[in-house]
Image 1 (tube, rainbow, N blue to C red):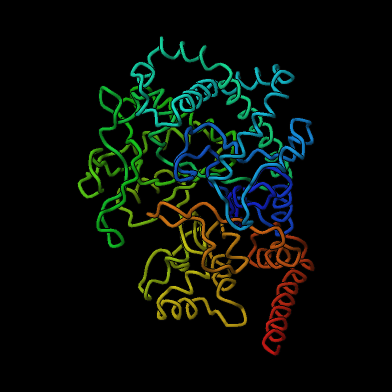
Image 2 (tube, rainbow, N blue to C red):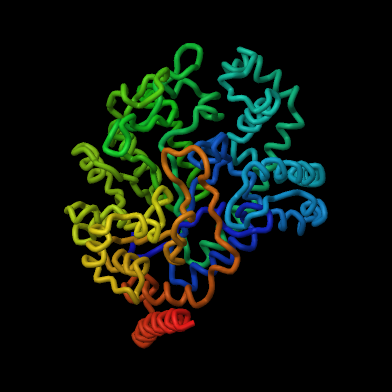
Length: 524
């Protein structure tokens, strides 16, 4: 990975008139913004269909795409919907936050109409799509059965034979629910058609997409239902052990995630074919893969499924280099990032070193009461990714507002941040100037947004994954400032010497303009 920078913003956070970000015009505009700002990467969150709680890390399938991201304006242009039909639905009233309840009610209504008009005319293309994506028919069956049983988790389906994925029951429901199966296949066809077009555009600008791959899959997913042998389930396909992390300074009960642990013995006996298929699927969506909770490859916290907290879990050995090395060898064209945050054990550190994958450094973790830690930029080596904060962190300005005074003062002293520069830009400069090969900031941090603008608060069950960019928040002035600082620290495509001087001049002018603007506001 060459020295470069990128911006983290979920697709759901893009502005759109239909309640949530999509693969439409705003996505293309954001790609153009990244190009103007000299950025090499757009980092997104998982693109899969979300379930209860709206978390992209709890998806109905590790392969499928989120129907919410299908752009409705494009469907109108293709004659599959009318503007009147789309406008007749309620998409929520607050442009800053997604109303998932309302989106759920409205989105599938209009997609049903699109299917009625477009399915028969697309039969050949759909057949080709199914051939390239063999997972889609099983996923469509799973979603159709969920709909048939009132959206209940497959663990609660009232008929035992289909709950256990028995062949005769599968055949029965394939016939019974054929119309619904066609619908769920069709919306996956639309999703990938739009995403492929958008990704080609992004890549054509010289920008790569970084995607997140959760190490675990959701219990209520097609993956666990259809291939239970690869998960820690009993003879009746109920979980034996679930994932989480142990108690620590932040949580006396630990974190109980509830995802089923893997049956690593069975996966290894099958030569990790399930994982290979999973990475192949992710490779169709992203150029770079960030493996969430990399530690789980080394050892994982296995909690008895009946427990209400994570206290009684045990550390168990993961596949280590047996799998990590296989993935690196099997997918030489995919770059991997290891999410190695937290207190890594010596064996995790060794696995990261053996893998050759870059780990992560988060600047918000660097200034904890002035104590030395490996998140401070002077401790970095080149093979790492530096973030201001991730989707699980506060924005930089919220961190500043809520941090202890001594931590704020230490950060300002360490980075030499002046009041006129602004704390968010000072922290960004600290990351940009570090030796880390890649620097990534959330778009909220470039905008200097504080409280109520974060993506997720871990451990909370509501109010997450809702934040959205407003349509007028990005402009040429901001793109120029980001470009200037990226060039200054050799992270943008390096122009001629005179252009480099001009870029530095632009940064200085932008800062002076901001100072003048602030002074004028103060005077008024």
